[in-house]
Image (cartoon, rainbow, N blue to C red; front, side):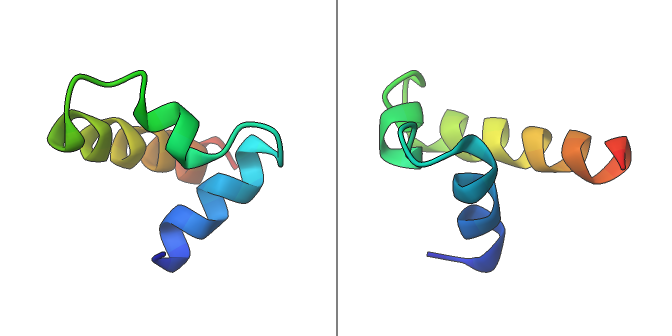
Length: 46
């Protein structure tokens, strides 16, 4: 897992892993875009 995804996984908490979040998306590409947008939002929120 990349450092970015590991960080997001930790932010989401132990019970909601990225594997579970992935199931909310239609495919891997949509998931990657969603995670990227989330990480961008988190970056600029601080």
